[in-house]
Image 1 (cartoon, rainbow, N blue to C red):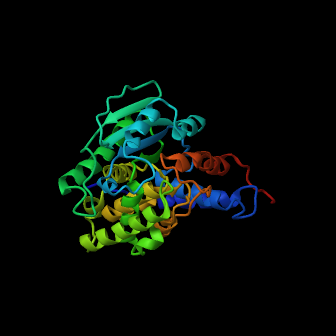
Image 2 (cartoon, rainbow, N blue to C red):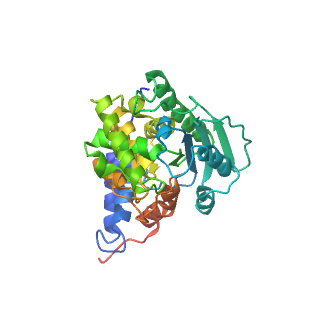
Image 3 (tube, rainbow, N blue to C red):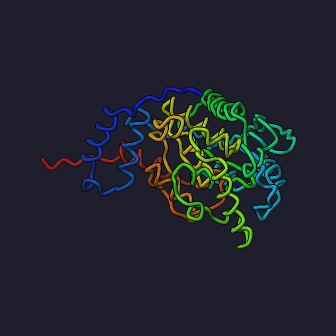
Length: 340
């Protein structure tokens, strides 16, 4: 998928800096809020931008690596949770309602047949590329063609969201086993050891955790060298779709709020494909999984929140939305200092 991503608007960023320095406060006193306002001005090209139209995209997919039982819950939970999202009962639904953000749920590769009905506040997209990925510990997770389809799915969903009005994009996911794929992606791209980046996901026991590390290590040896084909070699479909969504949003100057480990692994894929996409990313939070901080450091993104989350779904990213809004409101609504 070839997409052109514009450079940040340097003029708007300079205007935001100068405006911040004139506000009723010492220079730099609002810390990261000032940095955020300058970044957002650069992304959108506007100092008066506000995140009024907010969309949360939750991409779901299953992973062939679950043949090794690397989660504390069965793979069927992926499809179950998609149903719960559409019923409005999951954590992301609660948090999105509080943040005044609409939710769209996308089947990118769930290993089950899903037929769900849209509601007034929730939309379901049946974009299934395949019924889960292959087991990347014994071969390539996804064909090159299907990897491209996953990327295009994410782009197409964002295009549709823009038609409904979109100022800021929050990305989330659901997929039992996807912390294994995400950890493998992070190790492959950042060059850190598997032991360093791999956490316990759903809270697996020590024996399962050690088996997870061993399998990822062997898989990366099998797939070496992992290059721009990382998505196809390791998967999964929801990760590829999130990366495609990021790339298209960046091409439209729409700020992207990243969620946890899996979403940030997708950001690494998007960055591999087009490094300019990183300029449009904000890290909603840094979670409990060790690979999350490593991936954010690689992307040089500073998290807005630290709440020790490890749920996914877009929860940490949605929680950052009020702070993002406050960053722009302080820029635009505070008075200026006039001592002359």
